[in-house]
Length: 138
Image (cartoon, rainbow, N blue to C red; front, top):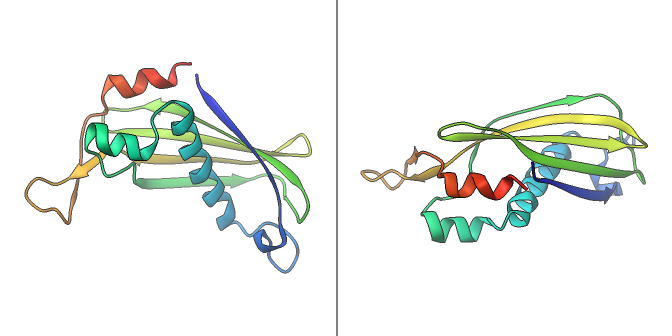
């Protein structure tokens, strides 16, 4: 299973007044590393849009469990992978480690979406092609 790792140093702007990471930043890092994972698989969003006509992979559900704090100056490692393929959605899983400890676990449910054929303001979920899935078997 293909995984991507991203190392980040926690900056002042990532933190709340207590110098602890402000929790929405974890979701930003989940999304950033998911896109880097797709890049690593040779399936960046621009190419997917052109090749398959999708509008991207919108997130329809997300979850995080915070286990250990990260603070200003800490070096964290974000690891992301596709943990499950469904017919029209996929699950990206994420783990963030800090000082050798699992600090955050998270998931995103992303939908394979195209413009609705009758209403371009709406999206329509479609089946994820096998030609995409095989790129992540590495």
